[in-house]
Image (cartoon, helix red, strand yellow):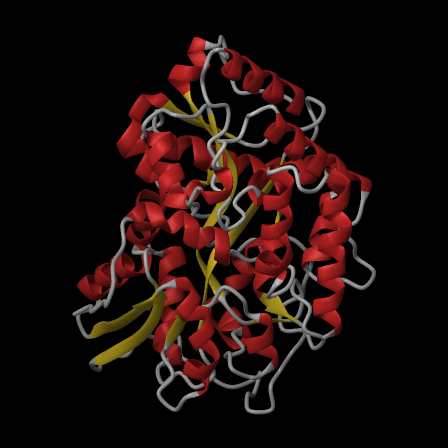
Length: 450
């Protein structure tokens, strides 16, 4: 049986994802990095599921029911394996994670949005032996790069310390009714066309953008602009803490200028700085905004609640025809080094990526690509559905675009200590676009030196 302590509506999962996504850019080589003194990288691991009765302990994030549904299906297929699930809200989970993983009764799996410190401290199991045993080299390396940590604590290379459950991309949702009202017959092909549509919506008495910013959600459009105006490799380098990386660039200043101008023009809600994620979602569902910058984790929810009145597109480039760039990441899960049932847990993670029903659950419940071997087809979905549009966006990025990490993950404190207050100040006019990048860089350097 599966036990959970708290359960929140599915629409809250987007907020969780905003705060907890990890990187999807960089480069790495399997088995080439950080190894703790307590782990043998050549240890033998099991790939056959035990026939004994086993209860797997999971410590998960409230409001993200996908793993719960997967665990129920896994038990249906393998009745000898059951799950004992404890859930905490994001803040409590991240605060408790180090202590929980270090304890003698560590869980077998934990939702862990930030893996660097835990890997460096030896709290996470090095998954390289499972990478070899299960043949995860058949997975596109871009799925795993963001989950690697090297000896220096740099993400993107080194040993594998986590796996994703669903691989998300972000973009722009739009209200098709308002789009038709202003004559927007197809998604904007450039940022200029996107901005023109905002102006048309404002003139028609519609809210151009509905975006939460009580905890810095305007980071979505800010980075979406930055990704197009600058070099995505530089953004990724900064997020991965590469030596000499900086966000204090002309591109970042230009992106911040756009955000500031959109605020001055009234394209953001007047109460954006007090608007929370749930209220934003409610307003968008009720038809109160043309655009909303968000991720594919909301596609299943919006499919149900809005039907044909919602669409999705990737953030358009500066110039039509430029390669698409999107923020995105897996929902990251790790096996603690002290886990009692590591083999069973690794089997479960492999099953999530390869079992046909599990992959369908990831797509239908989470709205994200299921990952796994490149040879496996995507589960079939209604071609007219919103999920089909977000999956098409993910496929476009995978085939011809660039997927980068959220800048909110550059350091453990950058989001709360700098991104959030700087973007709030930008929206209410207390600071200018030119002031934002150096402020972010100063906080970044302070945190790296502390």
